[in-house]
Every structure is written in structure tokens, then in C-alpha cells.
Length: 302
Image (cartoon, rainbow, N blue to C red; front, side, top):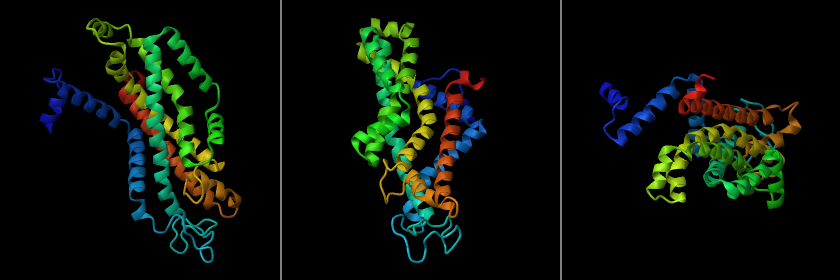
């Protein structure tokens, strides 16, 4: 173990592989020194495990309920750890299966929005001129509207459903990534190593794809992680309004919407999915803060 640690932390790496692994190990050490970041990582890992094993861990079906004998049971009654809803469905089972929907929404939005913003931002920053002006004005148009309002407009145009909700959230999430990538690109496009690559005959597209985009990835990863809490809240808001996942899908926002009628007497129906949204959002925020400090040491002292 000591030999491996010394090899990773060597000041004179013998290969690119050793240099990359050493850099990754230093990032991990910085990340692991932040206890709250580890808590956030544990929450997200627990969410992934629970979602993957939902079919095994859920004690009941998330779709079928017992209207006659299990309607609105309080937590801990008749084997229902978190109680039941107005349709007699087990809330714990619905939360576990709803974790799959939450992870699916977060993953799909990140896969769509982050690359789109990265491409727009790097191309805009490196090309400059009228290309920069056009792309940034389009970005400004999207940024001029509140994210939830713009997502509501897209969903209203596309129609309700989880697929359209993912597309709407992705279309409203890319502009901040484009702005960030453009700022990073403006800082490196006139650097010596970019000039050297240009003199070697590399095309603009190759320079952007092979040399500029990798420089933007650490900041992009941090921003995406921090934005995941907002993505979850937006998806829950669309579900709450009936524009996201449709019944009987166990989406957390839709569960809160169905339980708001019983909030005073049967508080657990809306409270349990609300707690789930809060804990997962907190986990992503803590994880994002830890990644920001680990990947950008300049932020650690602020």
C-alpha cells in the first residue's frame, strides 16, 4: 500500500498513465478530506443501490393497492413501514420504485444538456465573431426565462409525460453550461499550447474537441452535479402539476400532489416523498460542493 501511494504521489511520473492516476488520487484525497462531501456521496450511492434493488426491496407492488383494507394507514401499521396512500398502495414501495424515475430523469437530462452546452460554449468561445454573437444571443434568450416557467411552456407544447418532461428540462438546462464553457474557452484559446497545436496544422474542430473541451470538463462536472438538485426539483414540480410522470407511475412530485388533500390528517402521504426529495437534493448539493473544492483548489479557500 505504501509503495502504491508513493508511486501515485511521485513528483516525477514515468508515464502518462502514472501522471493521470496520480492526479486522480490527489483529487480523491482532497475530496475525502471533506466529511460533508462523503455524506453526500453516501446518500447518492445509497440512492443508486436502492433504485437498482427496488424490485427486491419493495415489500409491495408500487401500482396495486388494497382500497378495502389498507387505505391511508399510518406509518408502521399492518406491515407498512411508511404507511399507505389514498389508493391503499404502500408508500415505501412507491418511493423505492420512484428512485428509479428520479435517477433516470437526472441521468438523461445530464446526458442531453451537458454535452449540448459544452459544444455551444466551446465553439462560441473559440470561433468568436458573428458565431459567438449568434450563439450567445440564443443562450441569452433561454436564460431570460425562469427555468421552471420555460419547462412548463415546453411541456405544454409537447404534452404531458415523463419523456417530454425530460426533454423540456434538458432544453432549459444547457445555457448555464454554455456560458461556463465559453468563459473557460476564452481563457485558454490564446494560450501557448493552443498556438502550438494550431501551428502544427490542427483544424479548429480538432483543437476544440481534443484540447479545449477537456479543459472545460472539471468545471462542467461540478456544475452538473450541483444542478442535479435543481433538476430533481423541476421534475418534481412538473409531476406535482400533472405535466410530468402520469399516474400510476410512482414519481415523487406526483405522490406529493396526490397527498396534498390529506396533508392535515394523513400527513405521511405527502411528507414521505417530500423528505425523499429533500435528502436526495441535499446529497447532490454536498457532493457537488466536495467536487468543486477537489477539482478547483482555488474555490477551497473561499
